[in-house]
Length: 156
Image (tube, rainbow, N blue to C red; front, side, top):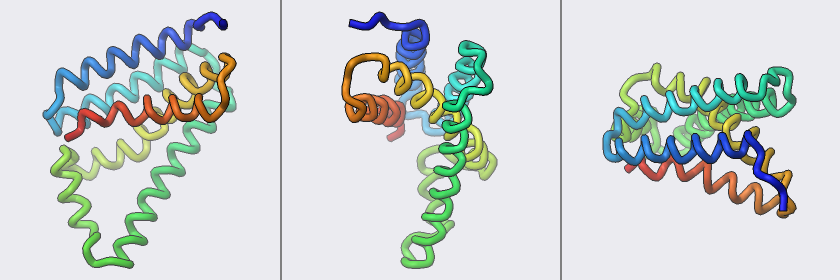
């Protein structure tokens, strides 16, 4: 059996702390987005300082995938709003306001910074470390996806 690396230990500890923080603030929609944004920024920045590998191919891939994902989400919303009248910008903003996103700057920060940091935290740390164990790739991807989505269970 492979030894658990420092990076994976850091991920597990920080992941538990992030869940504890979000659990304590469960139901506080406005605070959730502030906390989640801060958590992902701390996770992304601390990874860079921990690894000291700014030229990592995974770092650029994670940031790129995060930004591309944000752009795709915006384009999908625009496309769906053209197809159906039930989905409009105002209805999207109302739904986001229900979950605590009340200002456009919050959405901009989420799309431009938080999504890439989330990608960096999950893909670069967790998925990379899981590849060191003798498990199939699809299992590593599944574990990463479950961990990634678990941070959103506190958003009612």
